Image: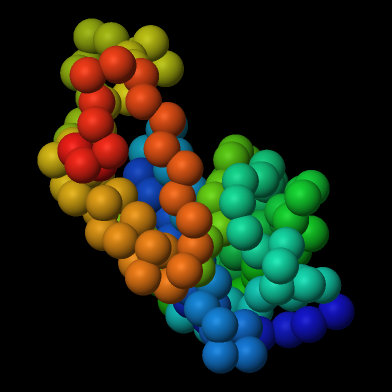
Length: 163
């Protein structure tokens, strides 16, 4: 097992974890469907077997306690994050979902509140202008680092130059 220190920040809708794995940055991003109380863990420990596994999408589950965070990532990523919360929470909550590991630094962004009369799960997710800018910036960073980018177009009128 390999251990490294980093930080995890959750702004109420999006969680971003940042870790230095022997000089190689690794980031985990989780978007939450239901907003919750923000928290931070400035002294988080990432435990993993192979840095090559810290890439791509995976499932996870965990607990954001009143004063401690624990996240367990499943196949293909076998890793855990845990540590004391810098900002205590009012109550403990069990959390789970999908996560994305990457070598490119994501940003936290507070999304606009969903309409009150429609349940959040019933709305299609729409990219904000900032989401598009962030995605293009991440893609440029990956290309500059030598990572290949695969573009999937939903409409025939989309050109690679537009991406």
